[in-house]
Length: 196
Ligand code: CUA
Image (cartoon, rainbow, N blue to C red; front, side, top):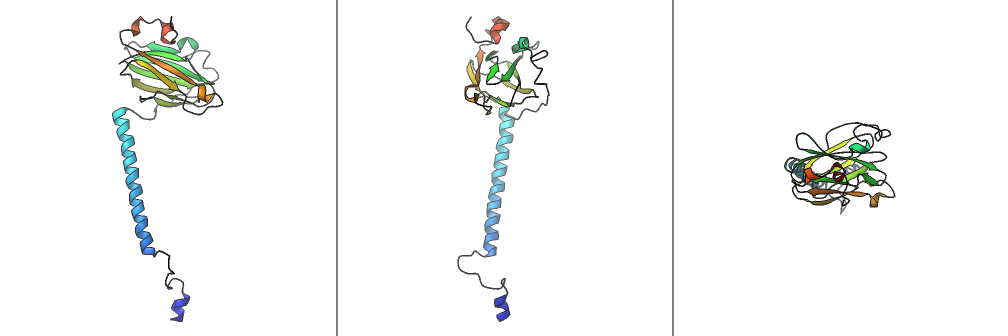
């Protein structure tokens, strides 16, 4: 009996300490709950990805941020909206310190749209509320997002990645016009929302 008392494992537990079997049962319950929550969250991610085309951009394309303005795809004359031979639209933008260039692009309703963006300095974010467009714009990489606008209107695009002291003022616009209006726009009007 004295031996049993000396062995800590054999001593009866003082009041307030939960027996090991009870601890194990509670841990199992919480573990089951956590696994169930993970399954639900994964299901939501997959479902949104499939039904709303909300997914991380998958292309990896590199670009030299120090020379991208000199020539090639992101030279100034190529920025803004371009119409492709198949009727789809490509909007190219650069994220600069505290501004998108151009600060407004025009696009057409119901046309396949591809945004191509890159940054000259730090990481910026590109978000169009109420659409599937939401990407980081990382220097050295080209971000590509595809979408289709179902309603005309002005969509504001705030920078949603903290990028410095001017972050709060970094935003631009996408002006979505009716499909039949778009072909009549001059190239300069497609990358500017200034009334001409
Ligand atoms: Cu650019 Cu925040």
